[in-house]
Amino acid sequence: MKFKLFDLGKIEFKQAWQLQKWIFQEIKSGVLDAALLVCRHDPVITLGRLAAKTSVLVPRDELEKRGIPVYAIERGGDATYHGPGQITAYPIFNLSYFRKDVHFFLRQLEEVVIALNNDLRIKSFRRPGFTGVWTDAGKIASVGIAVKNWITFHGVSLNIKAEDLENFLLIRPCGMNIPMASLETVTAKRFEFDEVKESLVGQFRSVFRL
Amino acid sequence: MTKVVLPQLGEGIEKATVSYWYFQEGGKVNEKDDLVELTTDKATFNVPCPCSGILSEIFFKEGDVVNVGETLAVIDDH
Image 1: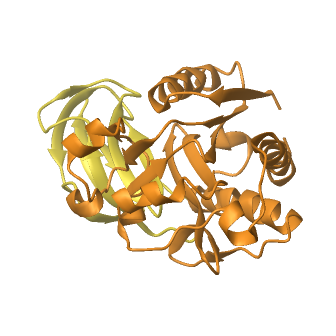
Image 2: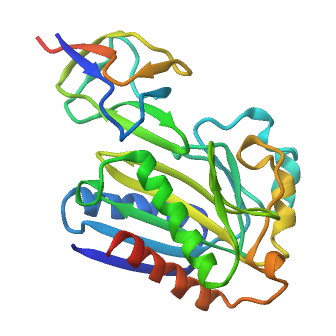
Image 3: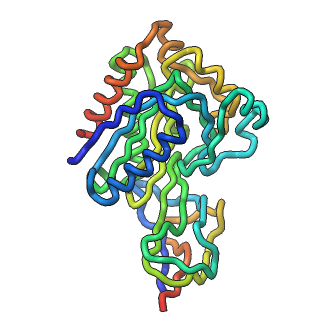
């Protein structure tokens, strides 16, 4: 398995999006079989392919004033928010080397977060029909992917910090009125990004046998 | 004439929703171009053109639900 980890630190969504496309081509041409990008973004709203017009609750000029860009992108799902209080992971995997099953891959992304939460003694779970990872206090991780030539891109965002959650009020996450949770709101503890990142990467290695 | 069929997307996935056509009817397409994108759960899935030619007929519009194995479009490759 030709696998490479890209630790991008804090990076603009648009830059990471372009990088995903570049790495996608590397995988398509066989230079790599799988790559994992991990990063944090400045505040940004992304709209999946089936996003409803009503999913962004604040006028665009207000978002512009706040410096929050909005991008319509090719992943599945509705609207989501990314911010510096999250870690986002973009697995760009050639599923020919894993299992060519779109839903199974979504369930494995959820498994990565559930396993991470287990290690932190946070109870989290799937909700059938509502992709993502949930806690009793709300959704803690959002999942949305695109698959081309059986190569995946986009991925999963895990909420870590408490202070970032209020920006989810700018949208209807996934087109629903749902509460959002984070590692910090669920546990009332502080978390360091680097520790969570190491754990997340470790769980990816374990779940996908990288 | 070559039919473009919705392939198997995974175990238990019987249908998907057309979310984006990259070409219109009558458009010239090349083999391996992205032709149509479908959505299932929180994933989009691209079906490429199986051959080069003219996209002569599209059977499902964006928003329509398609069953695995159904014909999405026909490409005239002569």
